[in-house]
Length: 197
Image (cartoon, rainbow, N blue to C red; front, side, top):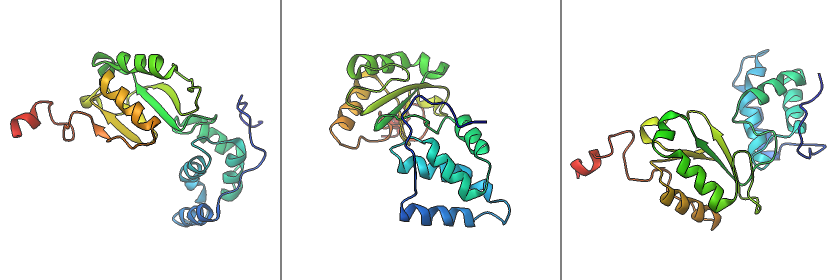
């Protein structure tokens, strides 16, 4: 079987940085002898983080060699899990949950902001390369719907207005407040904070 057929321009080589190579060796050492292949997911995550949040075939090949795995097994893992981006994405990957709870509470408004403000819809990247938008299924924060995962962080209790502010802050190089945008603690009912205060 050949490497995954991808439309992205693939780099010919990949090498872990010295620090990441040390990290990879420590990860591999956590697994018993002859079970090192169990480190495939953390090593792929490390490679993706090093390579602008996407995972080229050359990086998958390096991980396969380090773990003494057939390349196809690594390709299978990378293509199965949606957390691996096998093509370039923007600096900020906006994963917009569109499952029923988020949809009922306004995920269409969030998608509209992506289209009207950023000029992108599902699978597209903004012209400045900052944002890529993907529609995804349940991200597990249904009580705090609608929500968006941006890179590794959750933004919950979104409205068109506060999501627009988050996008503006990211574009300006700022770090928006993660979690609930209403001040809700955990998954408490929306009015719990008001009653407690």
